[in-house]
Length: 617
Image (tube, rainbow, N blue to C red):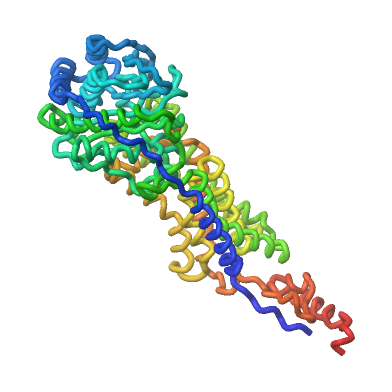
């Protein structure tokens, strides 16, 4: 009679380790695709930006056109003044009127733009928004300084020769999420654009360096050559350092794309675009007055941007487009496809373990349906919460936005509506309690094998990862910790069971902390992302995957830490199929200990009656 099979751990870590080898091979292969940024060379011609004239324009804007809320009379009068300045510079000037919805009201806005002609193919755009937030008193730095720099650059390129056409755009509505920039992209031909440079907050006192924003609301970033061009331009023309993003920051912004800057709509369409600003301690909107700006900083940033434009103008072919390419160093870039392949390679261990779990469930004839039902019941409260949030938005119980990305400095972000959120949370608790009661009632009539639940949890994580790859391949970064850690979770105490399951969610607080620090939101970062969720700026498909991920983590933690679960309950019989005394599939399944004693005795008698091979007699 063959010995009762020994038991092996679940999941199979041999498969886990083998899949890691394959994944690391793919990572190494991806590193052979490293490239160079091919950054344009700076022009030897000196810059001609007039900082004193730009500072005078800034004072005129702040003094004569305060309270420039988009669509108001000061905003419209400033648009006419900008038209006058462009025409005095001898530029071909245009006004594009358009309608927008701001805080539930229809308003009329204008984009003003002027063309400085050139003979070479390929156009360069310089853009700045003139409107201010409703709570701003003067909006000197944000963004009268940007408009002043825009006018200064327009005058500079009337005396500085250039080969490519340059368009200077003054937009409105950008304080509500790049409305003007987005409309300009929709209304004009942009396929021949070489680059877009946006100007915002360029007169900060005591700047820490040149700040850059090359992000977009889509999974694309400005190409490395445009980021890296800023560094030498700032060093040569302003004796300042450009604050370039780190590799983790670039990957994280691809994984969780959000941007309300004027460059965002262009980058989302694949156009190289970047916003240049003077980084430093920014004054709050109420204190953003002439006393908080610096003529010296305005001159330095304006000269830096002119140097960048002159370098781009000196090229004869367009540079790389915006996409998923990032720069690892100043001389090495990683294509977006290779980055996506690296992230996908780290999912192979999870995929291997999941396939192995499914094979064991099939051989052991473990029923999966009860585990699927249990998972669905655990997900139901989250779906109810989403339905309540979207319903509250339709009924006007939550802040409305114009459909663009909500700027982090908006007044609706600074004033969380705690009462309504508490009501939603209370409804979630009630829905969850009801779902638990229903689950317990249903589980009385069915037995859920913990091994089946473990497989379903891993399978759902694989599903989330695959769908994330289809929606945004870089968003896989958010589930990588779970993909790596969940197969290592073991039944027992919370440190072995609950902790690994929830540590897999670590990227969620990492993202919140990163944006809270980067955008200066502090503890209001949760409300900012809540607004992006209810406003559907974050796609509904991404939200559904997120709640499925959270729900699955709870299922795994509860199953691993379930009371009364024996340490050996989550194991499989380890059968050596090469042994001459190997047992049949029925006896293999019997080794799980799920059959009755009568079935075990029957399996034992069948094993005794099996004829032996001649060489064993």
